[in-house]
Figure 1 (cartoon, rainbow, N blue to C red):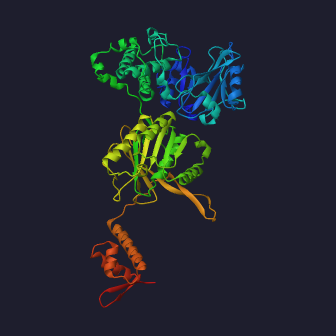
Figure 2 (cartoon, one colour):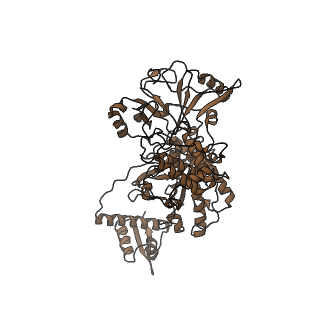
Figure 3 (cartoon, rainbow, N blue to C red):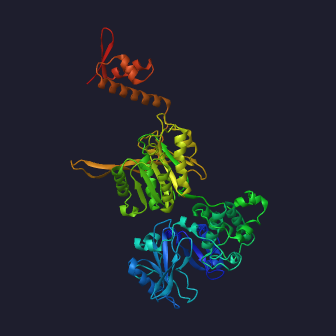
Length: 624
């Protein structure tokens, strides 16, 4: 039921012990179970009768208010609401009647959140509210029983009425911006600045194989440890990671379920991406620990068995656009490249399925060089066609309505790349490549390489960089070959051969993922209003289309169609220049010398034109 209503991670919980869920499905690197996995759990006698745990998914957050056994969560919530504003009514879950409950909200995606709320009230530090977030904690939900009281857990509507079905994620109230600011954690990049010294952390007590690390702090402490290792020595990070993995080999039922090799490597990957280097001194214990790794690993070599611990690839639009990659979207002028890229960008910003493909929501930064007026029209037109309120894009789509020179000074470009990471942007669009390389030469390897350097810098900030570019006159690649050869993904837009109003979208190159088949779309005109003269104005939107039906065409029919096109072209020529010569007709038609008289003869026989012979040349006139 939960999967059908849009929740991605319903898990059996409290088996074999209270507070446990199946390994590999929780924590920073927990995977989402599919329907087959859920069915397998249900078919297992013990797990089929277990409680149900609902892991938060990206874009949702739970506020766990505890008001029992001396906990002061209700009092703390009222205190915080005095300066953040009252929380809106929303769906909640509880098995108690003392005010304890899980308040569920929709929140911006791809953000880091606090683990708990704690404030000083009358000089006393008060706790009692924890935050349920995607990578940490999960919530027991209906039809579970509370392990301590044995009472059933129910869902309640915002009006406080018991519901026999769970809510959909979209049914949850949106968390107000004041609360978002209050609950959000530090930016990921700031985590690596932790000063890791013996005074702040006792390395002798850092033992992942026992219970010396408090439950709930494991990922945070490991992140800090690895950040410290990276700050002092790049190799130390590798050594520590390998040691941690080896400590868990052969221990599949380790009591700390989240501490498996895959999750450790995931945290290592986070450090590599987000923890900046600092001047922290690595503790001597860590150095000694690192030196215990064998010489092969010290030299940077990995045993082939280490290669099975691959990080699951991520995507923005499955089968079309991975994350993070440098992608190139190219096509003829006027084919609809900007409209198509804007359509993809807005689907990503809202996390909506695109043409049947799954989409992972991410914040979008769109460098739109045609100016704010056109950008405004196109976004309004898209919202109108897709029945989406403009306010839904608030904070999710950011538009820079002028060029960002990829060949300019490095300081503003480095600042932009840093901002992309800190702002949590997942997709950056440069529309177009030519307009964002002011004064550059797209055929110059030097200029193209410099521009691609900054595109790659965006990727290092964990965002996908989508570059819009034109084809040459013959329909082939335009510009230096580096622009096409050094990108991870290429998407080509062309007009359909049987119906030029239909746009074909084909992924020509996908470095790691399976390519999607050809997709089809078209441009739909949208009227937005009237100007001061009373004339209508509007824009266009890229919408889904079906593949035009292909009809078998015998050669004779093909030749007939070609003749009709030539006759029509002949009429256009004569109409524009009455009295033109046969030579002018032949040159304007663009056909072989022997072909032109035949086309003229057909037009004369049909009575479409008449020929008046002159003393030196034939004069042709349009027959009215």
